[in-house]
Length: 165
Image (cartoon, rainbow, N blue to C red; front, side, top):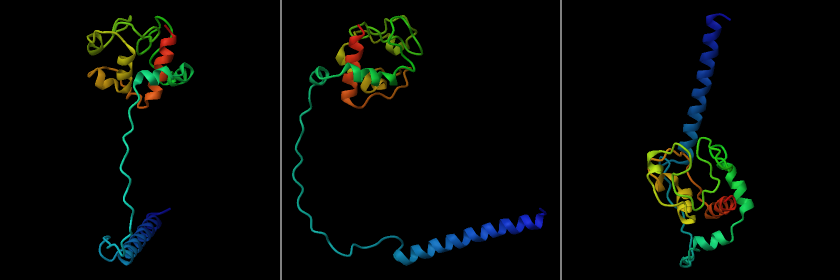
């Protein structure tokens, strides 16, 4: 293929794109003659919305009481890339065997200064708060997991972790 043929092909493609662009602009001007802003042609009568009813939040203890450890084992699959459920087997993160009611930052693992300095115990409430969004519970943690937004998932995984004790 010589340069003249290449020039013809490129020119043909550019011309076709220009024609498509002009068609699009023309259609836009036809269907939206006021620059895309259109006035409402008629008013739709609507009924007043019923007032919103506040739903009482169920205490986490009740959600945890109904939790399923088997479902928690499936949720734990999200954690397996970095954590182990076996005693003393650390991966990228510490082993979570026996984590419920264990002192925070005490497992044989190289914790970030943030987690090492937490103090306290991994109670059910602390685990729930941590699993909601680790970066808010322990700002500066090296754990990059975004968290579990569903309360039921958090309850199920805590029930599973409790069964490992």
